Length: 158
Image 1 (cartoon, rainbow, N blue to C red):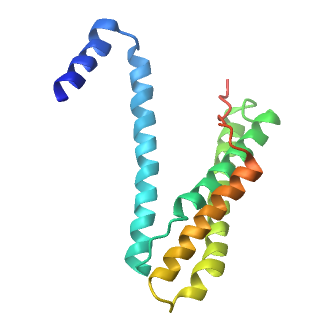
Image 2 (cartoon, rainbow, N blue to C red; image 1 turned 30 degrees about the vertical axis):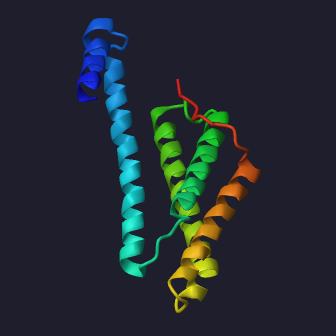
Image 3 (cartoon, one colour; image 1 turned 90 degrees about the horizontal axis):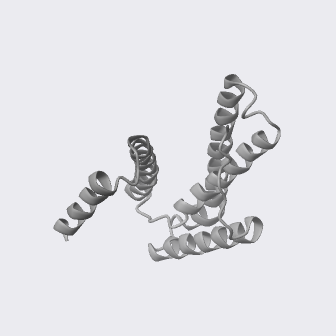
């Protein structure tokens, strides 16, 4: 298996030359960014389990809500023409997008904790686990109803 992967990697990199060096740099940067997102999700799971001894199945769904908030905020800036206006407006737009995503995730997590987890603190260990699964299913299905199931892409500023 390893030999096959190395053989294909050799073919793509040096023989076929499908992608240029700039594309490989973009792949590497995208991989590092995606790995950082996965690391943040894993860190959140670890912290919640380490402190509360509960697996929060809705953790990824709360992060999804923040991603949607960031998406719609950035799309609003893009449709207003602020992303391409100047470098300063681009930086402000991205900063506001980050803040919108963080605030949305924080508010969703606090509401979820107050409604689904806090009343069950003294319950047996299985009860909060079932509540977490229910919260996850609720958030996923509500997001699908509100936002739809089609893929969305961020606007690429020119």
